[in-house]
Image (tube, rainbow, N blue to C red):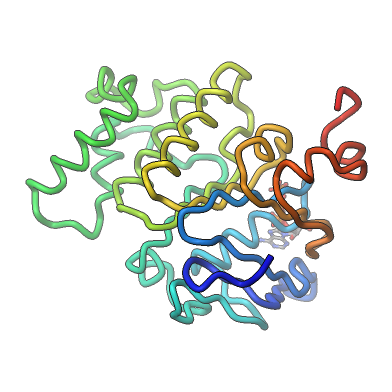
Length: 242
Ligand code: ATP
């Protein structure tokens, strides 16, 4: 894929946990307005990539550019200020806080209460189920609903690029479909998406472009529809029903 003029571009990213190499020359791009999938099995380096992008980990080598600005090594709050927001794996909602308070935490950079109220209404319109239950504790939600809350909380920060780390992990199939439909709608509203997933089929159906990560290296990339039809991807990631 040619390098986009705007959006996110990772080039030659290396990262190691102590002596253990987790990323080896990872290059990928998410063009503005695009949905790009990053696929890979357990331990491939997907979450490490997400954390490096979000500023939680500093790469040993390589560059990360977002809308023309170098962001590798910036602390995570600075990366967020530029519009790159990570919804981490495992959702990490505050179980002992209400749904509404969890959402308000997402609007960390906004101190005008009228704007926060507007953002809340926007996200309640996207996630009616959260509105109905806004005064309940987040811990009372099902896993899938907590994932929706985590995504909604990310959207409260008004991202230009949302990095979703395994949004379908551990969620029952019916809700998984709902979450993928939501991701599609969020993208249609102009938020670029990097969708990190093990659920290859649903991701490839949604993504314009996809990368496959194995042992810290990008081993394959292409348009979502092309990878869906790719024999290697079918064998390795789509199971026998492909
Ligand atoms: P999963 O789907 O299981 O989360 P992943 O593709 O997100 O996998 P990572 O979590 O990025 O993979 O892990 C990449 C490699 O780095 C793995 O070998 C993992 O064991 C290792 N690793 C991850 N976090 C740490 C850590 N904090 N300290 C040491 N090694 C780590």
